[in-house]
Image 1: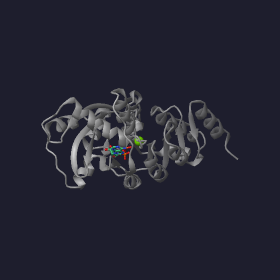
Image 2: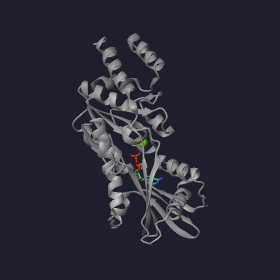
Image 3: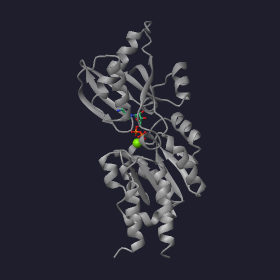
Image 4: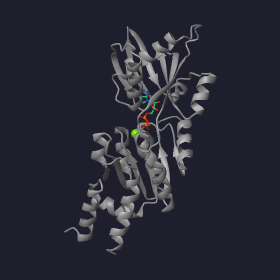
Amino acid sequence: AIPLVVAVSTSLAAKSGLLIRDRQAFEKARNLQAIIFDKTGTLTEGRFGVTDVVSLSGEENRTGEDNDRILSLAASLEASSEHPIATGILESAREKGLKIQPVEEFSAIPGKGIQGMVEGKKFFVVSPGYLEEKGITLKNEKIEEIKAQGKTVVFLLEGDKVLGAVALADIIRKESREAISRLKGMGIRCIMLTGDNRYVAAWVARELELDDYFAEVLPHEKAEKVKEVQAQYITGMVGDGVNDAPALAQADVGIAIGAGTDVAIETADIVLVKNDPRDVVYIIGLSRKTYSKMY
Ligand code: ADP
Ligand code: MG
């Protein structure tokens, strides 16, 4: 039988928009020493808007048309992706009334980008990390400046030739700041995990005064990072994406943002229906109160 106090807490949590799917995880929540947050869609809104388009084709005509072609091609490829970056690029292209062309042989490169054929040519929209991996170096002042502003940058390539870059900005959830400062006040170490570039990660980490962060982490490495932190601390993980599911499963307590993917929600021990990271503070407090009454 479930002790009455636990039943009461569980229904209290549900009324506040927290679904406890695993009661043992709820009990463990009171002992958490570190919490790892996914960045995009968890600490941030996960709604990217395009802020800059940079032409890099090396040709003389750096006109609006050139930038429009970059955005139009990128949007054509992104039409087949569900990543928040894809949504941002598509919205921006549609607002500008740009042509979205059909794409053949589309495929995702997990944690790095996408690829596909447009008009019989092979294009990629990829991360800075992907360029590094392929040994493509770029020296462009404008892009360095944009990166330093903490924006997410993706590159449009035709074959191995970089045509341009699209910069996007997301916004930090207004509730994240309070959630982090309260968790730190409870003696819990706050860490961020992201596939995004190290400049964006550094910027968000600084804004939120996080204790630590891991950037440019590939989807299959996320659970490994959780394990690393678990070697030292009893660790919770908060995430929303398909990529986050193995990390949520690995953590001592896996918490999914309610607006996240079905995979993340099904894997999590606890679901934050209101998408509010402050509810992580609430659940730990409730767990502490509930179980201190019992032992
Ligand atoms: P996150 O940890 O922020 O959820 P992901 O692992 O989903 O990050 O993606 C990591 C990086 O891979 C992105 O910041 C981006 O550079 C690149 N990427 C992933 N999907 C796409 C896409 N559809 N279009 C362009 N770039 C992408
Ligand atoms: Mg995410």
